[in-house]
Length: 342
Picture 1 (tube, one colour):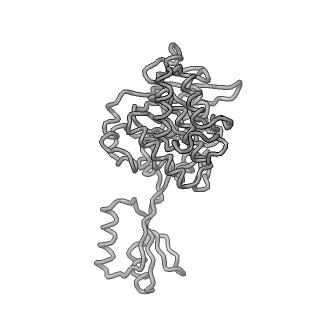
Picture 2: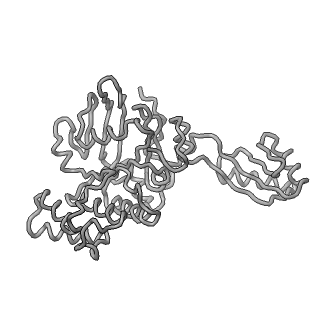
Picture 3: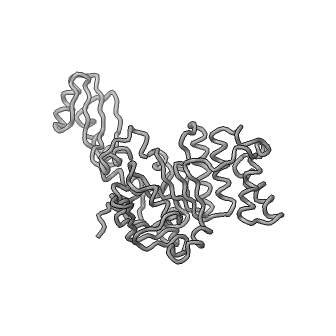
């Protein structure tokens, strides 16, 4: 019996920024890109995966988070046929992993944390090499190279050695090489590590565009903001078990700690507010109250109405809700430093 904290696929939570809400709403009715049941793996005496279940609809972004050693890499290696599980049933893109590993490999692409780009070759030559490996013909190969150079904004750099590319350009080329075989499921391992903010946002848009075209993305990332921005659903893996799964907003609602911060400049107003909210956390010197709050609009309106009825002047107000860092810490016991979860 699973002890994962999970929300249903039919959640009405709003779609992540930049994605199609209508497409996400129908995700629960889409065929499954990945279906895994009771997945287990151990290396000698160390149990790495302890019976995890996954159901990932086609055309969505699924993000797997967890601390070092949680089993993320092993999960990806199993699903991409690089490692054999000890137990469990797995279907990837409709192919049984145990019976049709070749079918799985033909339907997926893997972009690892470390670039597979050959620095001695030009961008065009790197793509042409991948076309040869995929046995594309003399007409189809050059057509696919030109298509991908254009799609990833690498036309002007096509004749330059990859060693001269910036980090963002290398990452785009790496992903373009993964797409040569037109996979419908792509495993992205920390796709924006080391990129500057603009290159990171460019990569996010490329990922969204791929998904809007029907591609499924299995994302592992060290940036919780990245998972928050991109993922339709997130699963948190800890000590080989899935301890929670849901949309980003659903996971945030699992964690208490939301509050409204009220800032006062009038001592009398501060005293009246303190009497109104006796359970609030108070900083008398700064004249600040932190009132427990779930972040919903009706609750916020009720609080403001209450202050208005009592004629309490408020200098400043801000709403604070738990973020994925808080979720990650609560579920794994490991602090992320507010920007990473390896």
